[in-house]
Length: 584
Ligand code: CA
Ligand code: CA
Figure 1 (cartoon, rainbow, N blue to C red):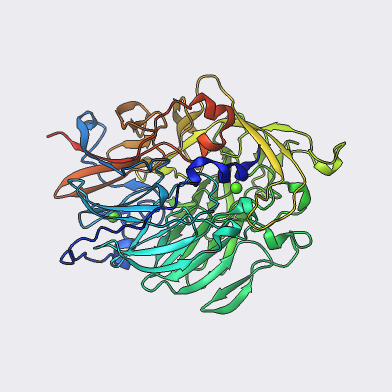
Figure 2 (cartoon, rainbow, N blue to C red):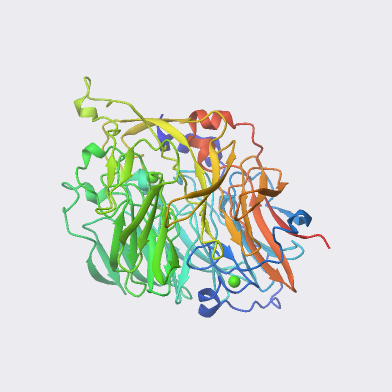
């Protein structure tokens, strides 16, 4: 099976050129601006959610407890807002809410602004997508950032777009790369001290990953940090040093098309003034072509927010061979006065790092059946591999296909982009996990602009008869699994923990669920009408706590999930936002 060429041919990508329509609200609709202080304090302030991750640390934690494990039975929908038309597909966003208005992105790069309490639409922005975009995994978007009177989000044709929050009109646009060469963008940007920070996707096309900071007000580029060694960064339009050392961990010229796409959003730790951003697979997938560790792919990079310089890095899977992108969030948390960061990787291991220097503190498997490596060496941080690399095709009889290996996790990951949650009350991380295996093999490949650059084929399959997904609670310091709730389909949506002793998450089967944060006991669920792949938020307005979650099935699993996708092909599409409150 060819990974990306299949996506280009599939029908949903042919119908994406749409008219750009802006329903302008009256100009009297003046919006109070989001300040740097609002962003810095977002995790503590309960009247709004102005950042992806519900705070720049990305803990997806709320101190609100008006909705709690005692009264959750009275949680009912306040309204359902439809994203409308025939444009369904995956709804992977996390909404934002400020000053009584919800801002949410939807599939096909649409943006909606709604009255947060009634669901009445204020405006809609439809981004005009050109023919020939090359997204890997559905026409999704994961959300935006708020700054001043701007809502800033990234598009499938690799633009960063700032809209006026009062009217939905475009204020500025910036390029993140040539979409014809495979650049695209789906993650929510973050704003750090007036700079909007974003990565770019395209690791399956041999792009070179870049993390960039733009002046959030004007869109002017401030700094740019390539994620692959040998490439030169910039600061204020001038060269600002090479990433790593040329050919230290890459052979020949392959670093020039080396991938490392930082396609998910990062987090920010104000205590150490550090941006933490994950990078994707080295390109191509065929690891035999690029002996060496292939820095700084498959790593968390710790960046200086002023200059984009790399302070430290931690690489999860050296000379990566299974598409275990290291792009999942790296989440700062403190314990016993120490500064840590947690990262549940696609490779099935949960890592705790000292976030002052990137040193490994703890690592443990968070999925069963992880067969590519037995454990992580806590001294070196390197995996103890189990001899499960797909074979070198140049050593096969016909030189065309290397030995097939069966390995888990699959490249869809023990978990993925959607974000685990951290409870400041229980000290536990809540991880939406999946147990899938894959057959994977390598093939010869040469780089061609705009063509899939993988040198691999695969087939994904379930590992267990009774479940694929499992919501799990872990103590990060001991690695103890405190509880789990199994799920038939793979979980593909973000978690949220609250001081109401609750953990919320959505399932592909359509249920939005609340469980007891301490015990995992299932307390409440609501059928949203389609599979959930987006992330919930909670906030309060006029003394009432609300919870909002997008619903709409799609994204990577049905496209690439092989036997898993077949098993769940009956799930209905949809495209809506559901807001809940307690029955009086
Ligand atoms: Ca807030
Ligand atoms: Ca990848």
